[in-house]
Each structure stands twice: as C-alpha cells, then as structure tokens.
Length: 281
Image (tube, rainbow, N blue to C red):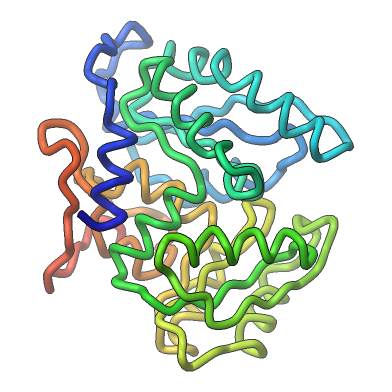
C-alpha cells in the first residue's frame, strides 16, 4: 500500500459514527473547517479566495504563546475542544492548518489527527498529511521545497519527507519570522531563482505564506507542479467532491482527486489521464 492509502486508512478510521447535528444543509454543497494558530492571518484570506459557490469554511483558533515548545503544547491540548466546536457545525472535514506543528515533533501529527477524528469529524487532516497526499496524487518522488523557516526547522521538514520515501532535492528558505509580510511576488521570484530542474514538483511550506495568486504562474514558468501548504490543506478536504468552478485556480493539484473517503475507505485513488474541470473557470 502506498502513502496515500495509509493516510486514507488512518484518517477514515472511526469516523462513521458522526451524526450531523449542526445547521441544515439546504443549499450548501459542503462545509469545511480549519484549526488555525492564533497568530495566523493568512489561512482565512487564502481559503476564502479559493472557495466555489455553495461552499463555506469555518475556523477555530488555537491558543498562542511566544515560546514554541509551550505554544505547541497549548495547541495540542486545545485541539479536542476546537475540533468538537467545528464538528458541531456539521462540517465535512477539519484540517489542522499548522505545518511546523505537524512535522516538528514525532507524534504531533498523529495526536492532531486523533483529536479531530475523535470529535466525530468525517475528514480529519493536517497540512503535512495533505502534502503527502498531494505528492502521491502528482506522482512526485523528487521534491524541491521552499519555506520561510530557519535551518533547524528545515532539517526537520526534510527528515519528515525523506523518512516517508520522498527525496528532497533542494530546500531553500526565505528565512523570515513574519512570513505573512512576504509579498506573493517575492515568493514567486524566490521560487524561480532557486529552481531545481531535477525535482518533480515544488512544495511551498508554511500556512503563513501568501501564494495562491502566483502558484499557477510559477508552474507555467518552471514546467512542473507547484503546491502550497494552504492549497494542499483545502484540496485534501474537498479533492474527492464534485464542486463548481472556483474563483481562483491554485495550480494543477486541483486537477487531481484525493484518496476517496466514505464507502471506499482506505483505498488510494490515482488520477489516470482525465482532466477534472471542477476547479477551472
């Protein structure tokens, strides 16, 4: 079984018992939820620009602390209640939208998934499991990574991917403590300046980086798929749904489907050569 199948099995386990008790679904195609670090001011902005008509996103904010270790502990302790709050709105899925939180400690990702799943959320996800599903859907084996992280975080991210069978061919950092202040055009220029032709795709890591308006242009200029933390997180939750056109097409990842949820639990879905027009204008 490949990584997508394993991730699908883990995320689908124990999610059948949820009975919708939130707002009525009349006129709604889908509702999704995100647990966002309190200091993140980018996720809501970018997700809102990607949502098609008839779909809504709902947010719960995890607590903040200036010290990283304390902050990670506070967030993971708060996750069960935050997930229950979102589940009460009858969302179709919940993603923990913190890339560094997901990869920086050995069991953090699984604890986050467990908390979301135990709240009764049908589609639990994290940014890093979303990235892995995207890597499989795009058939990537050699990955270039762009991030705003310092060296120690970058090495943890490299290790995360490489222990899961993905070779990181280049890891380049914008090195910023305020990634939200980096302009999308600066992200684009940096990706182009640090391009690695040996890679199969580029992953732009960090849910505080604004990337959506430049992803497709970077793809066109590099000639390879480009996906971001936020884009992958959304795609993981809705990538197997039939949805109308999105106002913003965030790269060719959205021409693929995720591993199916529901009846086909634990089965990896591979895109064959069809073109999916759900997210194109």
